[in-house]
Amino acid sequence: MSSPLGALAALGSSFTWAYASPRYTQLSRGAGSLRINRARVLIVLPIYAAVALLDPAPWSALSAAKLGWLAAASFCSYGFADSLFFAAGRRIGISTASAIASIYPLWAAVSGILFGSEPLGLQRAAGALLCVGGVIALIQLTPARREHARDRHDLTGIALALVTSLFWAMNTVATRYGAADLTLWQSNALRYGLALGMLSAGLLLVPRDGDGSPIQWRRMFPPALADCLCGSLMFVYGLTHAPLGIAAPLTALAPLISVPVAIALGEERWSGPRFMAIAATVAGVVILVTAS
Image 1 (cartoon, helix red, strand yellow):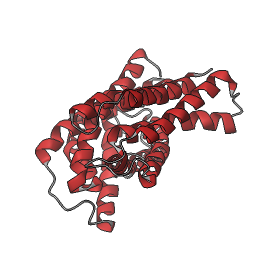
Image 2 (cartoon, one colour):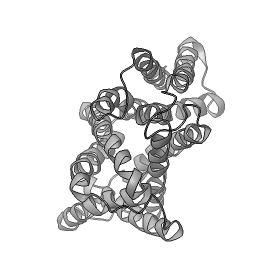
Image 3 (cartoon, helix red, strand yellow):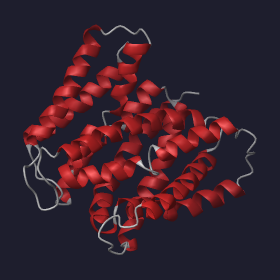
């Protein structure tokens, strides 16, 4: 099912993530990525569960296959990958980590070329060059040393952001298949419920995530409600009501939006060249996934 509102919803999810991700990264420096992710889930899961249980819509569309897809989506986002992203943001800066991680629609285009017998063509080649060149430029232009970020050539931070992009790519596909024929409230209740179990298990395995500082719940509520409630509803709606080749790049536009947000929060300093590198990266993603 496709509708113009699907594309708008996908774009809207980029705005909520651009607003929330710098705040999550700041909070995760003390409380740790896993605890911040679990706090996000704890804030919104009761809302999703209550609405899903009170909604008269039947649960007959749920199957073992859909539950498996939703479990994969949870692991590739809230359950694991987002924690990698916050760790990358602490090392190389939030907007740079966001730009690198948000190349995830590129993997769909690459798989189509390698395994789907899709032609490369000039348009795809241009998109790939913009994408790769933009990421390389971002790595080179990241400030060398900052109060809360390490060396700009921190290979661990770069690797974490790249791995995050792979997981986020799997998240978009898994969410699309898992949420099909379910209501937005049902699919998100399941995604967040599964993520809660994964994060709780992760905290048992890694109890010293962060420096042990208490979670600042008052600061958690605004970004969690914006991102995990409004943003997740738009994200799922966009992926299930627009073609993946359109919805995926629209959900990946957060880097362009996050730059002014990160600057306002003191996370990043303004840099014209870095903005151009981010713009090139996002443009490359859009060209790749919309190429005929």
